[in-house]
Image (tube, rainbow, N blue to C red):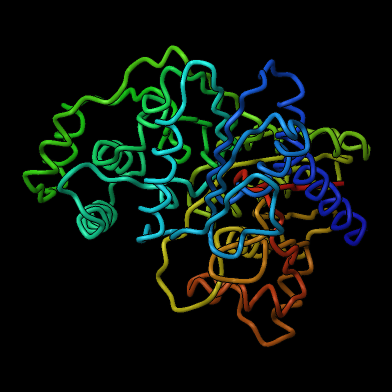
Length: 411
């Protein structure tokens, strides 16, 4: 029975990730749009090549020119008419600045007869950058480091770094005016705040100058004269020629998982598409739900989002593996439960695994292999524990990135 549940978990996850592949999602969205003929395409992010390939398939010779900006190792074969380059991620580098300059040059060359098609995915904030006059890359990296070390939330970090950029916070769309701009987004943001994807280069910025200075004061940022001048410049609040469409996100990931689970005969509940908490707490909480429902008929519980891990040990793992390990500890000895937690991009932390899948016997397989599961959890050593019990999920890079998927099945 456990093997059947595990197989179903993996089938549900595979199906839902497949339904949110960037090429498929982009093709479907482009098929519904009235785009015109003078198209310029800019694809930025970790899924940039896949989205550009879809645009080439759908639009062909209607694309006059295109640029792809992506992470090192994420390019595939050449796409006719597209210039492709790699840049720094997760830390911007000189290539990121060249990418930003190239994107701004492309946008500013357009007129009212042109249509700029922007294809955005996660990672764009680092991959494409063009800084305000007087600000250099070292300044930006220092500001980011200070904010991260202060424990500032990503929302606050974005408010500040957007104001230091000539390409973020709607300024790319402003540069393209009077051309029409359409942005298709594959979102990796929990809560689907689209202006946070790649720091919103084509979307109006809701944050104000006053908010930016409040964050700078709270986190004791050292601001040079050039930074203060940049902070004083207001970002675009309306962009009438720019429209934005979400083509894939964690909500769609959960919906596809729910669809497949119901097709397999499970009574299905999507608990949340905005899971944000400590990974081990999520695993323990889900285990408590599983213990209650075990033996009460085929049920599926679906969650999406992105948990966090507070690293206190020297072990190896990732948030999905830690969630699975915590779950394994609390469902030990219980029949009729399987729990999988998987990164939709096929990676989880600094490991080669996408996540983990556990059942009521996982804990005991770890013990038999000489692993203390509770100690492994304390030391953030989920990868070694799950490897010992045969519970790692290895997919390789999937080509998409729409957060994480958690599937728990009970019979």
